[in-house]
Structure formats: C-alpha cells, structure tokens
Image (cartoon, rainbow, N blue to C red; front, side, top):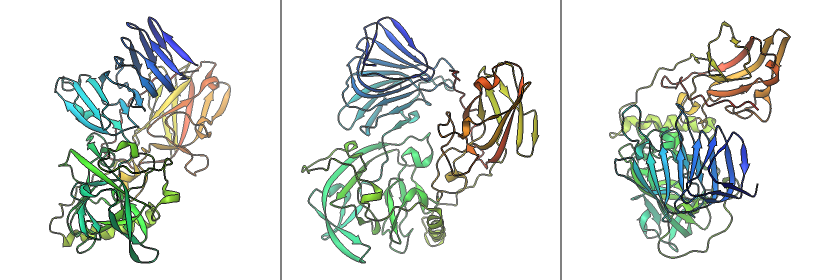
Amino acid sequence: MNGLNVNGDVIMPSGTSQVSTVTITSGSSLTMQGGATFTNSSTLNGAGGTLILDNAIFNFTGNVQSGTVIKFDHTSKNQSNSLTLGSDQYRNVTIENYAPGDTLTMNYDNIKTFTDDGTGKIKVVTNNGVTLTLNTAINPDTGKYFTAADFSYKAGTITCFLAGSMIRTPDGDVAVENIQIGDQVIAFDWKNNRNILRSVVWVGTARAVVRPHLADDEAGWPVRVLKDAVANGVPYKDMLITAEHCLFFEDRFVPVRMLVNGRTIFYDKSILSYDYYHVETELHSVITADGMLTESYLDTGNRSSFRQDGKVASLRSAARSWQDDAGAPLCVDRSFVQPLFHVLEHREKSITQALPAPEKAALVHDADLRLVTDKGATLRPVRRRDEQYSFMLPSGTQAVRILSRASRPADVIGPFVDDRRQMGVAVGDVTLITAKGQQAVTTHLQEDKPEGWHADMGWAGVAWTNGNALLPLGALHAEGNMAILSLSIRAAGPYLPAADTTQAVRSISIA
C-alpha cells in the first residue's frame, strides 16, 4: 500500500499493513485494533490528528509530523500496545495514556533523560536532542499517574563501563571518561600470551535510566564486582559495569550477568541512573579495567546510541559481529560458566565486604494449567491422567489460549544458564475429540507457530509455550458441538513463586 489517507474517524482491524505514508487530517483519528500492525512506514502526517493504538503494534521507521498525537487505549483490562519509533525525524510529538504493559521501543538512540513532574507528564530527551512528551495513565491501584520508573522501553544492548573505571594505558591507569581518540591502551594478546598496544579509534557515552519493574538483568542495574571478587587484587577496587559487559577467563569472554551471585558480584540497586562509556580499539581487544581483564567496545550496530565528544574519527559503515570480529570467543555454555560461577561464589568467605547470602525462594511445581476460549471462558481440566490433561470445550470454540505459570531458566536454575525466555509448559500431542471422532491438532508443531510458542527447541513432537499461547482449532471444530481437547504436557516447571498466573489474555482473532 503506497499511502493511507484518514479523514474522519477510521478503524483498522487486525492484520498487518506495509504503508509508505499515513496521513491523518486535523480533527480525525485512526484507530488500530486487536493486533493491527503497521511496518516500514516512512511518513506519518498527523498534525492535528490522532493515531490510537487499541491492543495494536505500530513499527514506524520514518518521519512524524510535528504536532502528531499518538494515544494508547486501555479500555480493556490488561490491554497492551507496542510503539516503535526508529527514526529521529520528529519533534513535539505527544504520546498519551502510556502505562506499564505498553512498550516504547526507540532503536535509533538511547534515552538521555526523563523529566517527571509528578502530574503524569514525562519529558523524554534522547541523546541527539529529540524530545517526546508522554502523558501517562492513572494507576488503578494507587489512583495516581504512572511515573518514569514504571516505563518499559528498549534501547539496545548496553555493554560498557561506568564512570571511574580505570583503563590500563602505557602511562598508567586512566579513568574511562578521560580516554580520548588517538590514545593507546594496553591489550592482552592471549594467543601469544603477551601485552600489546592498541589505538583508541572511537569513544562514546550515553545515559542509562534503570527500569526497576523489569528482571534484574534487563532493568539496566549496573553490576558491582567487589574488590578481590575474582582473585586477590582482581579487581583492585570495586568494578562497575553493565550486565552484558564481558569479563575474560581462560581465553573466553563471559557476560558478567551470568556470574552474578548476590554476594561478591551483584546488581547495585542504589544506582538508578548513570552515564556509561565505550572505548573502541582498532580491533576488538582484551583490555584491563580496574585490574580485571575485560573487553573493549565491539560495534554490533548500536554506535548511534552514543554521543561523542572531542576528535572526530572515520567510522566503518558496516557493523561488526561476535562471530567474525571478536577479540576472543564469547562463551555462554553452561558447562564452562557454571563451574566458574561456583569458583567465584566461594570467594565470598575471603571478602569482608561481601553481602549476606540472598534468600532463595522455594520453587513451585504446579503449572496452574488452564484454557481461555475465544469467547473469554476460563476452562480447568475435567480430567488428568499422568501427562494427559482433558478439557471440555463449549460449542463453537474455534481457538483457545493455553495459560500457565512461566519462569525463566536463568532465574530458576541460575544465571549461568543463558536462557532468559519465559517457559510455560511443553506440549506434545494435542487431540480434539468430537462427535465425528478424534482429530490431531498440530499447529503448535509447525515451523510457523501461532503466537506464544517458542521456536524449535530440538525436541521432536514437542513445543514450549511462554505461559500464554494461542492454539487455533478452526475448521476442526466447525460443527459447533461440544468437544474434548486433550493435551499431553511433557514437561512443566519448576517456577518461581512470584510467577504470574493471571496473565493478560489478548483477544483471539479468528480469520
């Protein structure tokens, strides 16, 4: 579709559209409903008009005309919307009724500042000067407006140093914020077991604001590695880095988030916002910070997220990759990381500043499995025998959602497991029994899976849900009589006790 012109109040139902230009005339509105999605739009002309997201997704990569209003609709309980703004070509754009559960994705830049005036108006300023005004919704639990701390936005993976990190150079250790383009740093050539010099070709800095409502490793909390946490004198002072930043062990890089033990390596929750710094060398390198071997910056495509001061460097146009350009292999294998985790964990006895051991929550093994039909009815199993759960479907049911508890393996087993997906239940055979006989339901096993199912996990005949998975029945139940749906649950849990068992149930659209 080349363009969409809206004059009056127009509703766009569920579906995906690629539109080059969306024009909403002054006083008009375009409501995107029930999963409607725009992608690859280049221009949104909405000065004086309003774009309303009603449980919808808007992936926008182009220019937004000044004065446009984008409004999130929360008429239905637990309703959520997703807004992606992938360009910096907009000013004076207002986003209304934003609330937790909504996602604002700003891939082109990191957020520089939030200004929260306490009246529901939040000013968001990006590193390249773009300003957005967000008017938040009322929190029904408190009767007050949501604040900046309730926000969920994505700004790319942050792997960097906090201010005060001391980078080793030929002239001694220098604070990262004082490193400049053209400086030399000492790099470790691990293949030849020697130190070499590498020139700094780029430096960048940005501002991070912690999002406390997210999981610790995704919220943006900085990680504090206590003095001597790795070995005596390593690091020689407390080290502050971001969760994805890698440390170097036995010729391999390991993200520090996988080594967080809560005592000697932990998320420092006293820091709610901070500046962070990147130092890029001519080749991705093993460098030393605070006496600890770690990594320089590897540009995997997020360089534009940082502001640069001082000298200007000639930059490569192509992003680099860990596979082809890393200074050492990235290792997230449990077989390597778990023993390393336990070695570092045991150093707590020799570190006086170590925190008290964190309390471990008792795990829950009940999946709390149930179905929700396309008519909104909640169904509990009428029979359970070993792995088989049977549900009585009302007449006319053409789709259900499989709901259960869900937890991340990294939380349940340990951070040394590099799996941060929400895992619900593993579903094997699904059978629909009607008056016409028994029919196999296999949509969850197909390559192109419905919403809420994880991609192939190497277990033939089984697919994992994320705790809220759509299972279309369609023509299989077209005759409209009551039926029995039987699920084979091949694996489930354990779960954290705080795992949500009342997840939002999105509307089910039957094509």
